Image (tube, rainbow, N blue to C red; front, side, top):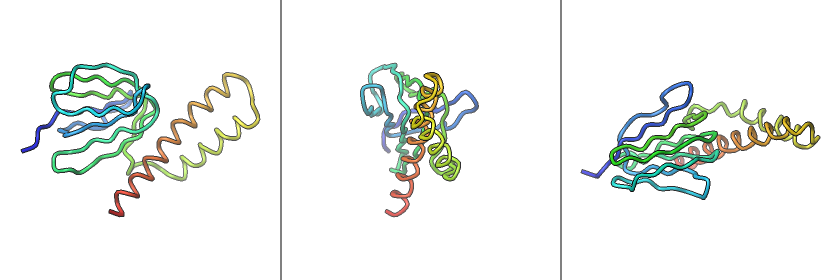
Length: 141
C-alpha cells in the first residue's frame, strides 16, 4: 500500500476536497511545490493557479485556485484558498467571457483599482482555463 497524507482543500464558501493523497502539487509564490507524505512542516502563500492531487492508485484531481495559503503538518496538507473549483466543474463559457472582460478593462487602462481588479481576475480565469486544458489532456490519455 502506498504511503499517503490527508489533503484538505477549502475555500471561504465550502470544503472542496477531503481525502488521502500520494502527492499534492500547488503553485507557490516562488514556484511549484510538491508535497508528499512525511514532508517537512511548511506554510506558504499560493498564487492563482493549479492544485493537483494524486490519489492512491495514481488518479489525479485537478483544481484551479485564485490564491491562498498552503500549510503542511506531519499528517495533513491544507490548502486554504480564496476560491477553488474542480476542473470538471468549470463553466468554460463563463470563464472565457470573464477573461474577455478583464482584457477589455486592461486594454483601456482605466482607474488603478479597476486595473488591479482586472489583473487579479485575469489571473484567476487563466488558471481555470489551464485546469480545463489539463483535464482535457488527461481524458485523452
